[in-house]
Image (cartoon, rainbow, N blue to C red; front, side):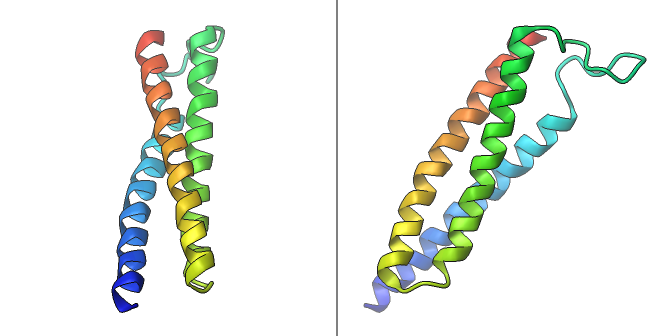
Length: 112
């Protein structure tokens, strides 16, 4: 029993670190837009469809990684069965965040 509990805690730690790193990456990418800004403060590539995909996928990845962190925090409150359920859902959300980050990177490179 203690091994299972320690395994959940270790899994929480790993998922938390990855989610925090993804949240940091996507937050930074949202402010350092591909192409930068023009003189009036507008994004240079705002009219391109690839840029819109970049913004949407970056925001999606950011939201998913933040939801992972909320799930991990809630998993610390509940008992073992429900805690394991929250950790499983966190892994699904973490995968979605990774996909969103990948799409944001690809569309950002394509845009520039």
